[in-house]
Image (tube, rainbow, N blue to C red; front, side, top):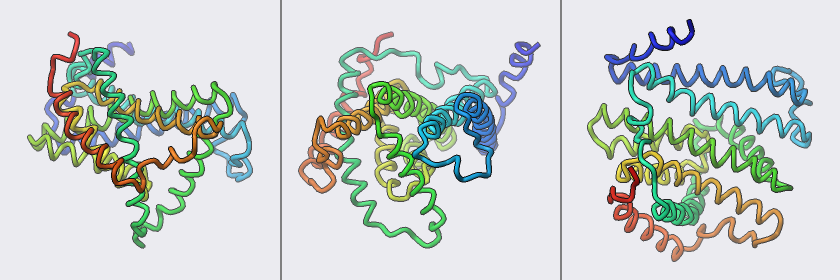
Length: 308
């Protein structure tokens, strides 16, 4: 019965207008987020004894190890519900092939993956430089409501990145590296960028509009500039490479490199200097920009780098 229902719903949005599709996508995302929050809350109550429906503020003390484990679990569930499930449901209802539409049907060879890794490392000093510039922008009064949310998000991220063991490192790579990279690329580059490009017939408008949404959805004003420009760069990598796998790898390597760097700094294997490398170094930024924008087009416009 369930399989028949799923089959009947395939392609029901095939003739839907693009403006309506954007609205329906938002509905699907909200539905996935609510469902994942409810399921995650049930798991956290069962496993950790932490209730996310409790009105008591005592339960949200970050010094509580069970609380932090529960928050990581919720982060995982919410990422799946908000970023991974909606693209699957959305494409099913549009009657489109998941792998073909998202350009996931091509494998990358080892050389290309290595080049993507180098690009990911090169993005770090540029992100630090753009973040340094972003911090000098005062928060507009009409965005004051974001201040508390941003502060809480930063505190939570800092707590997440306190990794005392290899196990903690692995968990954070799973959450911030694998799930975040796969989920966000599926939704933003895979669904939204393709949708905007089909609608506007302009790949450039699609890239920059998607980058804007990618930067603002995180609700972190003092990181909106680096996310905007790096999001656009990832968008162009997707366009010129012809495969969403490339942008997923790039996003994964970038996020994972930051997580590993935090782990190494926390355990004093490397200097804390590397955490802000490039923030005030014009030479590092110039080298980074040359590397990113001069070589990436050559690397990814050559479709022979893929394995059929």
